[in-house]
Amino acid sequence: MFIVLEGIDIKGNTVLSSILNKRTPNSVALKENSDLALEMIKNPENAVEIFERLCEERVKLSNKIKEYLNSGKIVILDRYFPSSICCQIEVCRERGFDCKELVKVYQKYYPKWLKPDLVLILNTDLETCIKGIREMGYQQVDESILKKVKKCYDSLADLMDNVYYIKDEKDAFSIIRNTKSVKA
Image (cartoon, rainbow, N blue to C red; front, side):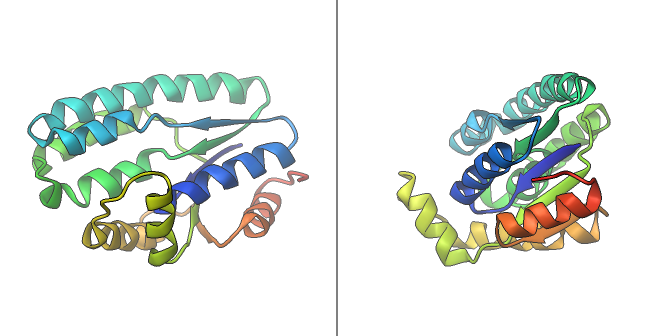
């Protein structure tokens, strides 16, 4: 089983990933490298090229995930392609990115990425997320962009049939158990 954790609560996703990994037998927790996404924000004039590198890295990550799945592991991934939909493409204008070119790159690589069995979106209120982001050392938080990203995450269930909104690890374990009898 391949499970992806998403949502605007950066800190909460990492904590939830750790909890799920510790309590799910035969699992491995991975985290998508966010350095390239941050580099895009710092260098919007090069965002398309940076995004292409991010997408190439995601292909490599997909192959690594396949290896784990083939060996019988349950893979828990903190962030994946839904992040690109909501954090790069949805707010591309606000961040000064070339939206059309980002979409072209996304469409080029999307077929190469392994699709998750479950996408669990940690549904946290905006104020809690902003507080957590600041605690992680990011003092400047653009609330208007964060609101738009949250709205995008809130609508993902309309686009994908395997998206579930959760409040905590109890919700996550309940969904996992109901989907594939995983004993947590």
